[in-house]
Image (cartoon, rainbow, N blue to C red; front, side, top):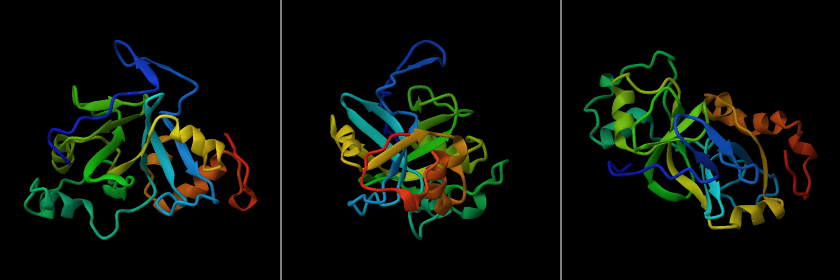
Length: 216
């Protein structure tokens, strides 16, 4: 995570003064992508992706259901020299442990924090919808360590990115389903349950899916 890292610009929504947004129905920012069982790319098998930006210029999202492995949040903060000891981390009021996830195959050395909208850094935080924001600077990690961060958050290493028109082509070729997002599906602690939950959210039994393109 770079101190100079900037959140990507909102692509599929036009944001005016205040927090109002006007969604473009042809784009999927603020929604969830759900990998079809026939997904041939092992990097995205059984993935649930929260879409942060989507426009004619491409798309960017964070995988929210692939754990990063052995590293945990206190270890990462110590590696980044944000804290000296895990004992210095204040437990958030929600009591939720901070999850570290594999956000995607692009820029895996950089961290991206998806979080609730009760926390905002001017010129660094992207408000994706009324409930969820994205911040990609170390300031939010420092705030979380001090117990002053957002109520809900996950840290993702890397992200998923698509060139112009690539995501649309993958959907047409049976790679993805999509559905509305909800904070529990993004921030919920039961990571292994997110994929079947996302499918159930749109009324689909994983065993019933076939090689047909689908839309929620």
